[in-house]
Length: 325
Image (cartoon, rainbow, N blue to C red; front, side, top):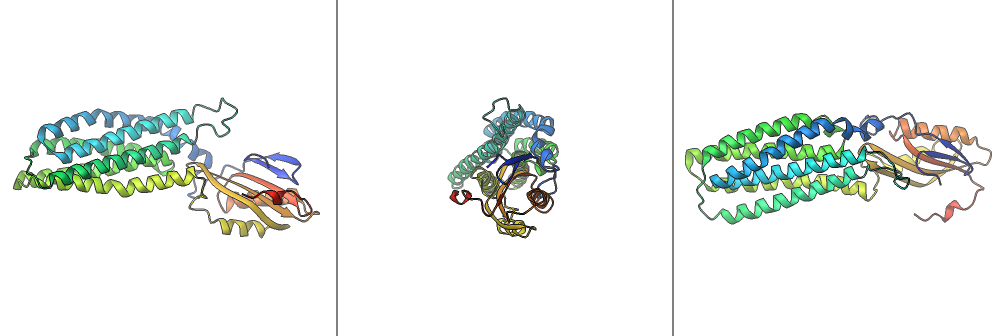
């Protein structure tokens, strides 16, 4: 069987074609989706620089003011900076080309590995914050509210700027979506710190600081879980969530002159780049060129997959039944 993008006729001739470059299930152009990181590299760079520059300020003020909520928000912002940095590194490598012949997909999967690393960072930060905050709930730590308000306000402004920079790219790239989600979560964390600081300023209820810190930690967890689940789904090469494999098989078997569709595999290489390989059995007298064209059009137009390997084989051909996976 040929590599993706090569369509076999009767297992003998090879016709090269990737379709018309139509998009994946969300209507995006597949090539555009793959190159989303490259297109949004500049705003990602700016988001990284402004985020990492503020981490030390927030952490220092948090320690000086005695605010665990501010320290936890700084930790979350540090994970944002780390995630943004890994995203930037992954994009740089992914767009560096495919100089080595053995890297037939280039560096596209680095984007997914970066998203998984972001997940680990988020879980680590959330666990630390929750642990420390719960340990302090029973203690009375005095907290300076004024510095909390000033720094949390600045942090919120930083998050909103990064949010604006990453919003467009997050619709196309899992990697950018991970960075975007971290920024959104941190913005909400900054709002929480502001609320807590206001309460402390008017009531001197210092335990509110720990409560806000716990809230920030808990807020991170479901977003980290979803990002990690999406990344792992791609790494284990499960069928994309938007593809109904049974429906796809039936559609292929309903094509004119197709007797059976088997050895069907659907997977995602990186964000927006879905691929499929399938064997189509036809009558020995069938027009294999017509079957191939119909199959490619079906995959492209109805299921939004333009990167396909379609092997057309007559029913009297033997050998393919030996494939067991």
